[in-house]
Image (tube, rainbow, N blue to C red; front, side):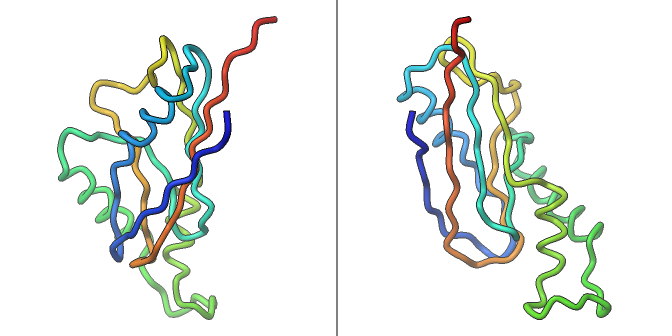
Length: 135
């Protein structure tokens, strides 16, 4: 299957639920068993899987990351967004999701999130579905 690309507009720092988009790509692929990779090609954003039942979790994650990675005057990066690069490296640029019976194997409360650490920006992310091959 071809890689699908999505574009979204972000706020300064946010986590955007992209679970429905990922599920739609899996459904449209027709793959019953395989893998789905969600990838972010940006160095100041990331992809994570976390709780999607309580929006306060997103708030708390962003708060925790802000406290874990405070801005420091010793940073040398000319753009002034070293903190965003640190958060992106910590969260990661991609997630892989197992597919069984044509559905992602996400937990009851799990969702897939695009994480913005240096917005507002226009961002993109890709979704690729890979089918298990018979040996």
